[in-house]
Image (cartoon, rainbow, N blue to C red):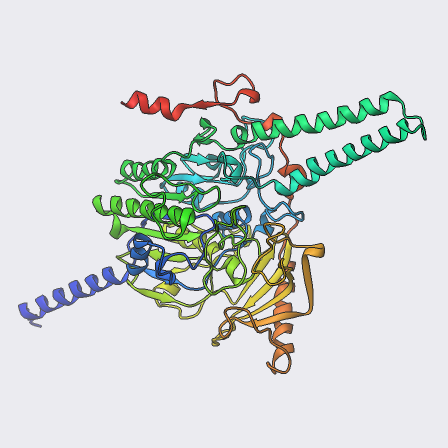
Length: 591
């Protein structure tokens, strides 16, 4: 039988095959992108221009949003720094990690604390490092350093998957910057000033009674109270003198490099470290987590940004941080890496609305139309900016109004890097790419659980095939003064006792219709009221049953200062002489 050859048909087949291959190449995501994660500290969702701010200048953050996708219901897993960042790093609720306290102190404020992110937890940095990524954390860590000694570094970033660390081990506080005030006002009042007043009144009373010969008071009693007052005063003065150098310092990997840290051009130094890391790793996949100190108090900015914004010192810091974002984006463009890099921008929680100076200056940001702020689970405390850009894969100018979480970054970057998720634990985050690429039109989070420290505070339910987003509060913070939008008397809202009001039945809102959370629903205004609460309670019960008891990393013992864990400059003979500046030494050598 004769075989016929048709050249035209063969060429047509080859052409069709090439078209199919080209179409598949365009439709498939680029493999193993670089990952750049940018996290602000205490930035409100109402601060960036792309989220509606008309007076703060954030052109580079806005550029990210224009070139990618803006998430308008992006939620922090906690309204406080330490637990929120722990959830972000692991894709798990903080309560699963032991990073949710049952006391007032919900974050680490001393470097020499023994608590931190458990070594048993898997971070996205460790997953990506195992896939051959170069990994770096620049900026704020705030998830602990040591467990038992100054050399074990059990909670250190380098023990959690980062190849390189440059930044601060704890957080930026007012006490870190001379003249910026203190976060310990209440502690000073209750532990120093009040006891001294009691001792003073006691001594005066005893002296009068002894003078009038109404009672016999031995001289030893007076000596005892004088010594007690002197001890309290000496400890207070030591705390004032040593807190800054012992807790506010820069580290480079395992070594202290500047103690106490200088705020001079600090953002510029962090930015330079970030851009140099990108340049060093331009030829291989990398993960950069640039964790800004801005805009947490103490506020600071360089001379190029000081007094330049329309919102005082706070606006200056926002605009300086935006400049830094621009520097990172520019380096990616310069090196031709933008098309192959996923960039994510967010904040660890909402703006700290109670940050007001003694002069009445607002040092906290804007949460837009949303109620509350940092340290509470009203929308203002947990709704944060969420922007992702990856030009080759993500359509520019998208806006997605579906509930997402900062825990979602963990499974998202893990899958993009080709890593398998751990199978021996619950991962609460969800891969964002199907939602962003339009493969899913509905968030994978049907339920989200909002904790105030270790207490389940609220439940969010987004039913399948429904636009409603129900949110039920089991308790709410007592704002003070009563008409305020925060807990100004205590500086932050607390989660128990007289600081809260319990609700039975829970306070129910439909966030899709009432994003300001002004009008709680009732059985009269919502016919399905009891059914909705029943379903949400069942979900909360199922969630609670999935929790496993773990050591409390934020217990009072794990939070308090321990002198045997105190890090100091290598040249220091003891923690009483912790001062050095290897940053300046390095600059002189480079010159």
